[in-house]
Image (cartoon, rainbow, N blue to C red; front, side):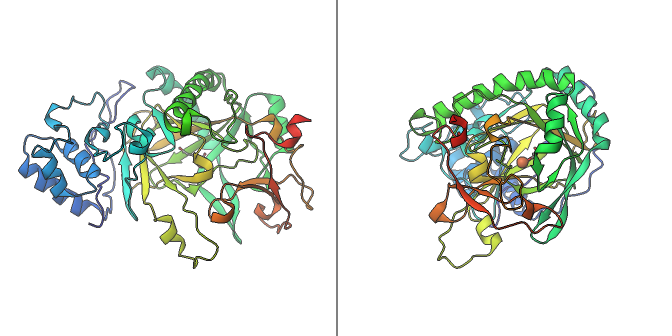
Length: 441
Ligand SMILES: O=C(O)CCC(=O)C(=O)O
Ligand SMILES: [Fe+2]
């Protein structure tokens, strides 16, 4: 079984704008290596169960790790698996929950142990659509149709007008200077903060020149994102974390968005590669609220696999693929919350796509607003400085088993194109709430 999920699915994006979507997207065929085998399996199952719709069969195939035999068993009346004929029709066209079909073994149904069963396999991609599946299998939660339709459309229109002046960020990757394969711009709450940002905060070793003040519409939306994200955080702690307690270093205080990166992806080829967001100004166990507008795209996540120092250096791809990846589908007007486990333990990306459904307002563009909480105690005037005389970056050890989860301050200048930087290194200490020692002084 090479791969089990086709990226094809019934075209079902909700049309919240009330405008007719273009029924014939101008899209190139997708060179999808998975397609043949999955389609063949679906066709086989369709011929065996002509009354069961294709979306249900695909759900079942996913939950059965691609085994036609297991799906056949399930549909032939095995007790663990609910009868798909009794399933209510999905109100929107997303995949209905996999959980109804999951065999939970000895774990209590719905318990974190049952939920956290690894569904992905080496080299494969598990596609998730429903809030239940996303919360159960990733460190994220999603709210579909987050804003009133008109408000989402208006914000999209406004940001589409701004987007042509956005720039591609440049950064240093090993010895090369590379450009991000999409454009972005940074927005902050006030003009004073804009000035502070321009002169005090480094990003990839440089000061940002184009920083804008959030628009009144962005502020209104931010005021709605704030309580929604806080509610999701509370829910996540209660249902997913050991003993229903926040994680060590996670802030117990309210999440207050005061800055936002707005990203624009024009066409399916624009993307962002696998990365973790910078914790330098957010602190450990940061939480991010990410609003998607326009064209629906795939947000892919994968867990970082730690390794021993003695282990022979496996190839990067081998390690990356060790647990497969998960694709979260982000439709227009969805709010994704990246929870406290995300930045330290997982990587995320926006996957390039050969096929997109044009959006009635945005055409081939996707706009994304990532709301962030810059914590005062992580202002660069407080954080350690290196020999280059600039504030350092905060990193978390992710791969080396020995120190996994420890934080460190490192020289920023090594990230600046044209600069080498120094070798400054200092372990970072925080209290249980993620506050640095100077916060108490
Ligand atoms: O476009 C997205 O949904 C994600 C963007 C992202 O990862 C970032 O801004 O750090
Ligand atoms: Fe990111």
